[in-house]
Image (cartoon, rainbow, N blue to C red; front, side, top):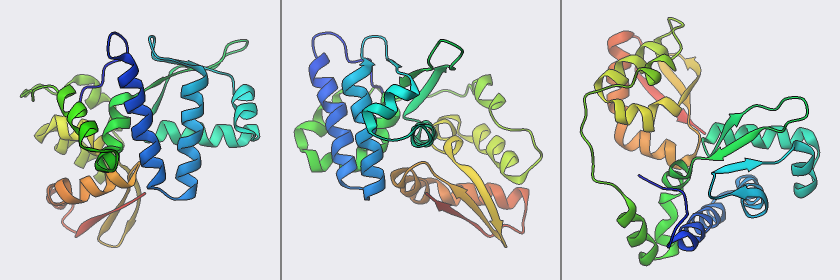
Length: 225
């Protein structure tokens, strides 16, 4: 899915679509997720620069906006980064706050499950923005480098999956992390319920086959959120 920066003639529509997707998704979640998404939306509406895709706001200012303490700010920002919705583009330093960008494509992908709740016109607009599918056998070196070379079964499975299907690995498998090994089951953590459901529906069987080739004692995977 391609989500360009909301600038130009249709900028207002794009901005409202992103906020509509976030709000509809929040209303479908539990109270903890609802509060986290509301906090993100408050950052977007108060301090986010749409043209530069840049969020520049110190932790103390965020704490004041959210009416929370600094510990809560650090925890919530870390969870938003783990979701892939926020991306730190510059770390904080003395006299300088951290900069973040929004991964708009990831936000729209994770909220796609609630688009029907918004309406068919919304779905049509998003479909019109999607690019034609591209076919390539090239696996970017940067993605390979991001896989930890720790000798674990999960690291080996990531390499194998990426070699088979670089696009699916980048969009879905790369965002899973290993939790534990429970007997013959490898337990993985997904960043959202939608991500978990997609992997379970479309990729779990292939992932299990890869894991079993690496370690025959593995009987399956379990994905938690």
